[in-house]
Length: 146
Image 1 (cartoon, rainbow, N blue to C red):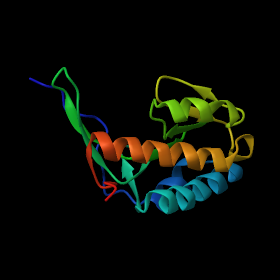
Image 2 (image 1 turned 180 degrees about the vertical axis):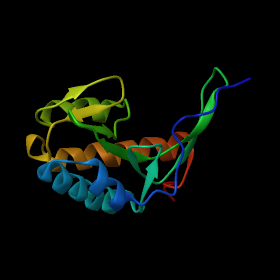
Image 3 (image 1 turned 60 degrees about the horizontal axis):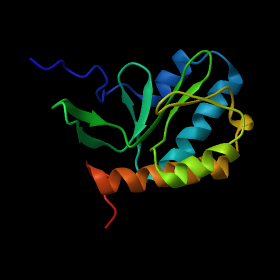
């Protein structure tokens, strides 16, 4: 039996989540700025995914292992230590953009930043657009480029 995905879209209000979850004023301001930017870049309204991810749009993925599910096209979580940005697709263009992003850490597909002023928002936009393009070409998604 396949395990159910933990991260699914919920009905929790995004503004209520930020106001109750995020303690620092700067992190709140950065969260609302990310919502504005990612809404604009994705053309999608923010929705909560799981208990702490704010996602924009959605797509369906299926791995060779047979595991499949739905995920936001772009997303972030205002975690206590740093923002987790879910905006990266492993493409050649993205690899070229990363060195110019600014101050960040990275795991396989997640970019961690302490505050928005640490990064170049123009480069972040390019990374997001590249990820949207990649997802639209490889998955069934709300971001399908026509």
